[in-house]
Length: 410
Ligand code: GLA
Image 1 (tube, rainbow, N blue to C red):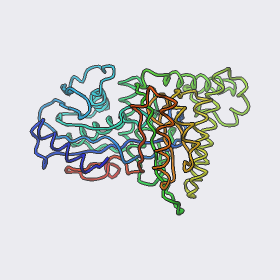
Image 2 (tube, rainbow, N blue to C red; image 1 turned 45 degrees about the horizontal axis):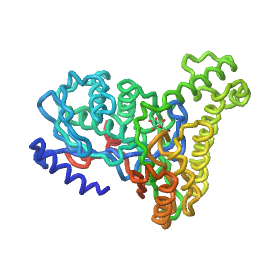
Image 3 (cartoon, protein in one colour; image 1 turned 90 degrees about the horizontal axis):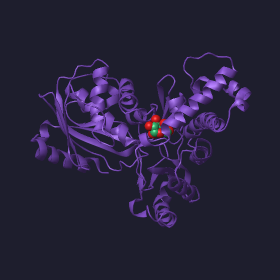
Image 4 (cartoon, rainbow, N blue to C red; image 1 turned 180 degrees about the horizontal axis):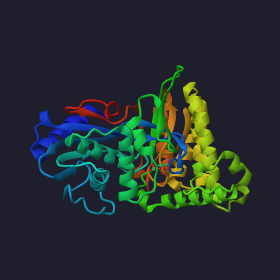
């Protein structure tokens, strides 16, 4: 994705569709994110890792005096048009839900929106796994805040974007996606403690060979709200309640992150199936994150990659969130020479697998995976693809008066 080329294209579209002169337009970039370690533990208040990549959502816009939002997309037909006071209820599968949700989240938080916007948005690979939905939400929040001269810190934008998903769309997810999108810095691991919302950027301090991020798309597209995502969240909570009761602790909210490791070790035999598996995933993933951060800071990509692969295995066996095409991709990737490690990207019900690879071998890996996957999943082969990308800074304005990193604001 060439950001400069895409930006120029969007500016031309904004001029053609809404008559906005490129000189007065603003452009915001919200990258996609990967989560090498820490899968499915954010909603249980675990500590997770994330990284933004050099692909994402670009939104070219101009604030408008009208109290109206008008947004169109390069990928999807139709225009999203509504008044700021009436964002309306979410429509199933509608890309405009995120901008409606952004208006609602800001308003409910007490922000006054007096100016709407006109805009054109683009984002490749909305098929899942890279958090394109959170990227759209973040881009819309930032554009609305900019247009209304609101200074909102990244930490608050994380919670506002989470509110779009939790309160407006009903997905019970955590803060992994938004944190990766807003806080990341190139070649750093973004470590997010979901219990305190504190984060740390962990650099690759020791010299390592060149590495890339390989994305292997399954061709499977489906919204997370229609999957077992929320059911797994509820199973984790049920496991936490049993463990806390056994430890005679009366926490109001039962989440696995509230259970001490010693309590888990003492009472885990009391968990019925499959709650025992969900808890096993949580506590083993917490440990993998701990070891992974040390491996990353020492530049030990082979060890970091092995932990990713183990995390993938735990997602399949314990969290049971994969779908057969994703499991196929995972199995193919982890056997490829040059792959340090691989796992499902994101929730794992659809979308892609992510692999950390030796850059010198990346092209060869891509060429090996494509026909092998087509043999396993012939019906999906035409929509499947492999992309090689790199780590990138978090969300930022590319054009416009702010012209600065989102992290410097607020
Ligand atoms: C989705 C959710 C995140 C997180 C991941 C799995 O991307 O939106 O909150 O739970 O799945 O790690």
